[in-house]
Structures are given as structure tokens and as C-alpha cells.
Image (cartoon, rainbow, N blue to C red; front, side):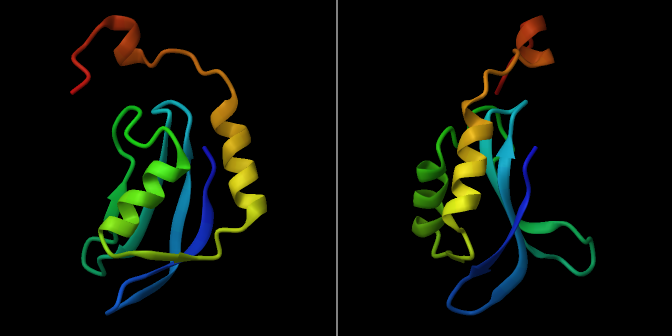
Length: 102
């Protein structure tokens, strides 16, 4: 799983410790940001379901629709995540045993 530090912004707040990446077992791009100080869990956490964001463009479009902007997403980071996403992956445990996916 790749994880890259980026800056995530809204009109009201900025998170300089947000993380974007690719999760091979779920075959999805993900983003985490705006940690809740009480729980230490991200308030924003997208890409937690199987193939939720199969392309970086789908994740970025959803972020834009929700009013988030990214800084620090370099061409090198995009290339690294794209290379990871292009590698074939085995079916997940859930898929192998036929358990409900959603």
C-alpha cells in the first residue's frame, strides 16, 4: 500500500498531514485527512470499499465535488500510485469465499 503526505484544504481548514495512496487489496485509491483530536481517526476517509475509486481521477472528482482541494500531488506521486494500481492483484479473501461485498 502506498501512502503519500499531501495538503488537503477546504475554505475553512487546512490539513498539512493528509495522506493519499493506493490500496492493492481493495483495488482503490484512498485519502485520509483532518484527524479528530479526540479519536485520532481521520474525519475524511474515502476509499474504504472494494474498487470504490478505481482511478485517481474518480477520487479527485469526488473530492472536488465535496469542496476539497489538494496541494502537493506531484507527477512523481501520481506515477508511483499509477504503477502500483497497474499491477495485477489476487482476489481478496472476501472474493475468494464469495461473501457479500456490499
